[in-house]
Amino acid sequence: MNADEVVVPEPAAGSAAAERMRLHRARKRQGLRCVTVLLRATEVDDLVRRGLLPKEGRTDQNAIVKALHHHLDRTLD
Image (cartoon, rainbow, N blue to C red; front, side, top):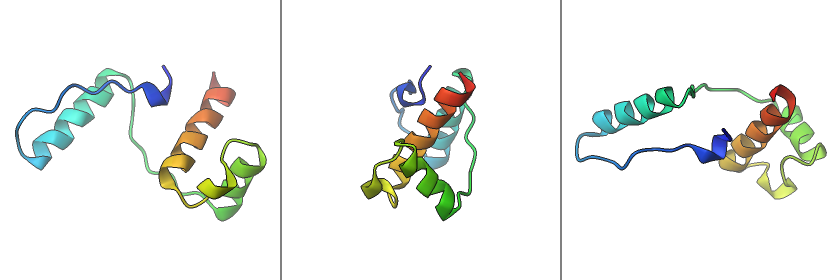
C-alpha cells in the first residue's frame, strides 16, 4: 500500500479526542504507524538532489513527507 492511499472512514460526530482516536485506530488497522522524524537541512537537500522533492517544496511539510514516503517505498520495497 502506498502511503498516499490511506483509507480513513467517514468521521462520526464527537469530540476532537474521539476523532483522533478514531484516526489512530484506522491507521493501526491498515498497519500504519505515526512517528515524528527530525530532518537536517542537509537531508532535505538530499531529497531535492535525488529528485524526490521539488526545490519549491523545501519548506512544505506535506511535500517533505511525500518525498520521504517515496524514498522509503524505493529503498524498503
